[in-house]
Image 1 (cartoon, rainbow, N blue to C red):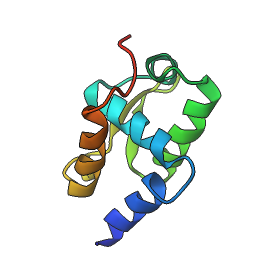
Image 2 (tube, helix red, strand yellow):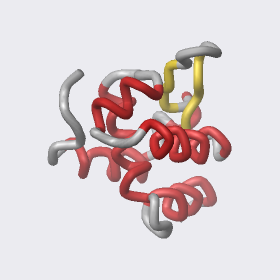
Image 3 (tube, rainbow, N blue to C red):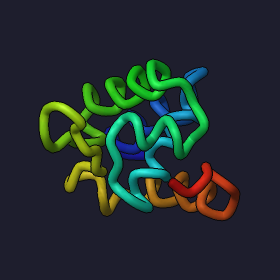
Length: 100
């Protein structure tokens, strides 16, 4: 497992918030969204979604475009990561959230 995959393992599998971060990543892979849209889509509290997106931003897994109402995307350098695709693919087979 390379260093990038180890980081993803820690962020998404080895921590208490990992499953939620996988849901966030899965949601923004389907459709880039802002925090409010993510919170509604995932049926989660806005502050919880914000905490998880901040962790993903801090580690460079996602990018935010814009200031107020920033829209979140998977960072280009992570788009081809096989481990990330595998984790997100597991969630896509299940219901990750509701349509907004």
